[in-house]
Image (cartoon, rainbow, N blue to C red; front, top):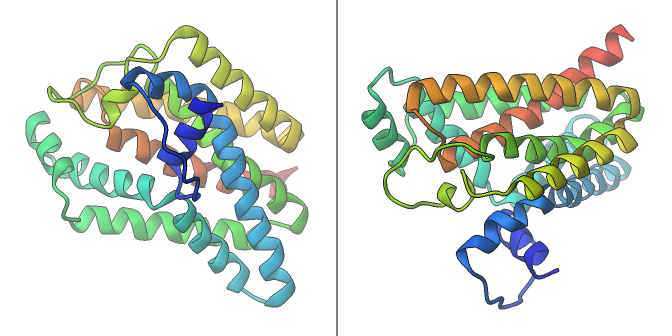
Amino acid sequence: MRKFILIIQFMTRIPINLSLEVKREDFADAVRYFPLVGLIIGAIDLLIYIITCKLFHGMLPVVFTMISHIIVTGGLHLDGLSDTADGIFSGRSKDKILEIMKDSRVGTFGVLALVALMLLKFSAIEELSRVNIYSALLISPVISRTLTTLLMYKRRYAREKEGLGDLFIGKISTLTFSIALALGIIITLAVGRTYGLIVIVIGFIFTVCFRSYIEKRLDGITGDILGASVELNEVLVLVVFCLLQNII
């Protein structure tokens, strides 16, 4: 329970005012609870959407849901996405890319990535039917955080100095990795059913391809890459749900 609370405090802004005595390795062990943290975030998103749908019409429920999501997560993964875009699309060498990603300022590519992501997410949620939107909102944070473990397990940390990503990358055990994957798959199949299986397979393929591309550029993974993966997989789930409802 201590590690579960630890990872909720780390990955969200949910006000759990408990002072925990933790070791550095506790963060890696707590990765097994990533899918449950995702489920909590998804449940909050869904609750906000349902409540605002009773109060407003049109696009406002979608906007409030997206704002709520940013508040709950603290924009942690959005920051990783913008830093990743600034670095990767700079066309520079590995060392320069890592230097750009560490810069707290947001560049042109970072802004474009955030705008594109928000437009995709807004459009996807708006297009989903009432039946599918409940499942999609609930499991997109689950799948995205589950698949992030593929960027941690037996991977290399790209930076020489310790950082937030170094808490997880190359540090999680086979048991932790297996538990996280199993929990994520079970939750996804229970909530998403047929769609869930298809979405998690597509997400798995995308994450492996993304990992391969990043490792060729950086010879490893960073914390920003983990954040970018979460955001990209979240929007991928929503877009695939839209595709599936139109063809099945």
